[in-house]
Length: 305
Image 1 (cartoon, rainbow, N blue to C red):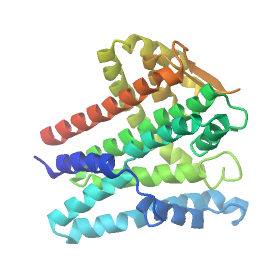
Image 2: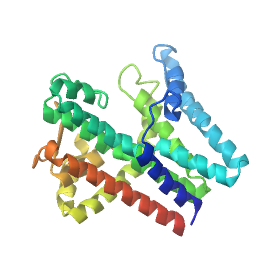
Image 3: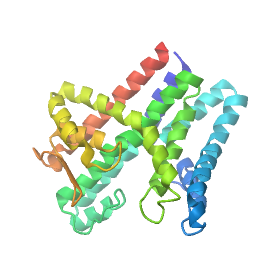
């Protein structure tokens, strides 16, 4: 069996086992420090911010690639495989994604104010007047969108780079860098110029994985008998969510699980056949099965190709 298949399986297993350790020395946290250093607003002349954004993006990816390149070229194969397993686990946020939703549910058990405080860490919307259902919507919307960003896209690019170059970790690291820069800089506020390239690069790198996620979800909902509802919701509501990619998993999950996602004053996706409290487990279950299916398909592709 190719090493890539072993790395993918053990990387996912390690993420489920240890999750996302909270430490300032976590690789993604260190990456965030680097992005925060060059991605400061009101620091450069406005005419140079877009150029700085492009150069900063390239430098960040290059810095993240340094340990990958050194170990790939000079370390024994076994050392590179172990490194790749650890790095892939850091690039994937499967367990932490579910933990973030669970933290909102736990906070809601203590009241609306606690729930609003908890969900404010996951979404950028104003949470001061959100109802119980809208608080849950923010949490599960974040989970649905991050099914692409935190799970399927890293797996996808790992598989692509493993098949083409024999070093899948480069693909996973590339996407994690791009997505982190978008998360920190890709906003239409004072960061709009310096974060423009980061936002576009993330859209491009997530475009195919988002559609792959849609196919995986449809397969899961076909087994559950709700693929028709998921597809109808996708056709009707996917463009209500701003952006190229987020509307795909959100609309399919809303339709397949019979729930409604709502960002007050912006969009409503899905039909409220049941509340998010009732449908929450179905959402998490669907995401888990989509992840497992992605891993199985990825392993098969690496073995065959």
